Amino acid sequence: MFKAKVLVKRRPSILDPQGMAVEKGAKHLGFNNIKETRIGKYVEFIVDTEIRSSAEKEVTEYCDKLLINPNLEDYEYTLEEIL
Amino acid sequence: MKPKFGVVVFPGSNCDHDAYYALKKILGLDVTFLWHKDTNLQDCDVIVLPGGFSYGDYLRTGAIARFSPIMNSVINFSQKGGHIIGICNGFQILLEAQLLPGVLLKNKSLQFVCKDVYLSVENNETFFTKGLVKSKPLKIPIAHGEGNYFADSDTLKSLVKNNQIVFKYTSSDGKSDNESNPNGSMMNIAGIVNKGGNILGMMPHPERACNPVLGKNDGSLVLGAIVKNFMN
Image 1 (cartoon, rainbow over the protein chains, first blue to last red):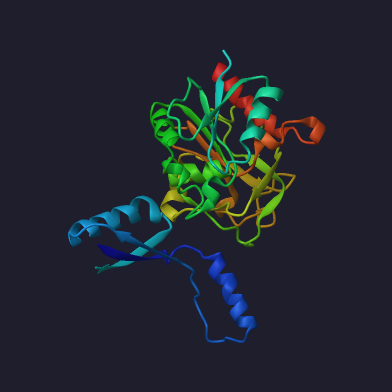
Image 2 (image 1 turned 45 degrees about the vertical axis):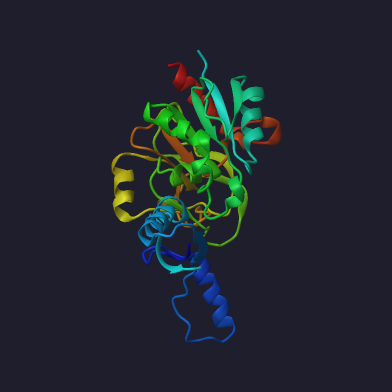
């Protein structure tokens, strides 16, 4: 079995109003060095197979078809074998 | 013959009954609900994907509804030239299903905006808008948190070139500017059609502006135009 950890990031060209609003809060708190706050998502799940290549295939398909919208987001993932 | 409408009901749809009521009770049309787990479109001529919060807006708005069993039938129907209108969450579902280009981001203000807005009819040559008057803005309400239309510059250029921008947010006298833009949408876009012209997505709710008793009736002009254009 594998544990997949997927990080979903908003593509750099896409405006992130949420990140901008959070950063305003940071300024109010006095964090003057904080810049370019971007908010993404973290998804983790188990892939129930013994074969790494098929786990990779399944993770990328899951990401491409459902977890991310390619117009909006990019992703990266790690796959860790668990016993 | 008048068209038969089908209103899809997803878990979390909340404008399905408004759409049904407007079409059935006010416009006097044949309307049926279509359950999201079904695949039979019951010979409907026009499919409505209504507003709401399908699947709780989890993951992304419309992202999970897009994979409901009924959506395969809706996509097949669209490929054969069938007419589909997605309102609010329905528009978000159409974008996730890639039946329309672009995405809807969180409103620029980060606030849920619920108010009447004015819309200009930018293209009155489509199946959905033929017969509407370009110079007369329509007063129709919006109610959404994620209606900020975004597309890359190539997509925007192609929307303009192919006359796919159907509705824009304007002031009451038809001026499309920052002040009349309720959510930060690029080019004040409120509604677009696909290249084939058989799929319309719009954030404003025409079904909520169909009863003069409630003070607004411009939504019935939009729904009425669809009926007339189907019959011609």
